[in-house]
Image 1 (spheres, rainbow, N blue to C red):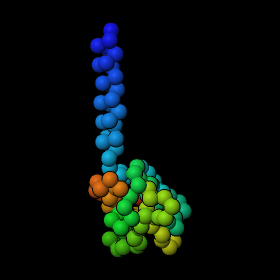
Image 2 (image 1 turned 30 degrees about the vertical axis):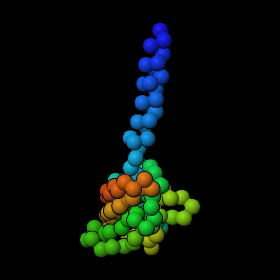
Image 3 (image 1 turned 180 degrees about the vertical axis):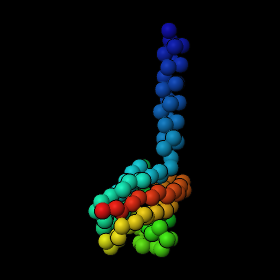
Length: 120
């Protein structure tokens, strides 16, 4: 019985110590406009939320039109290091592509991209 309790306690410690490494990277949690969505009203910003705090100097995003023209650069916002915001002027109807790079505060790099469409 005592050996089973010791084994159970050891297993709990191993699992508890291993859990943080599973979330050691800053991944895109969600975005507005939503990834792959079609919106009827042109947004005045594109906002990305990440699973961990980001290093502002090494994280950012770029919004491009369907032709590849750069429409805005995003930075980590003050007060919430888990968000990147790209401020934009009214976007005309069309497809848009966001590319992001993130360096989490624990120094792991991630990157990705997604698209959305403005279609009134």
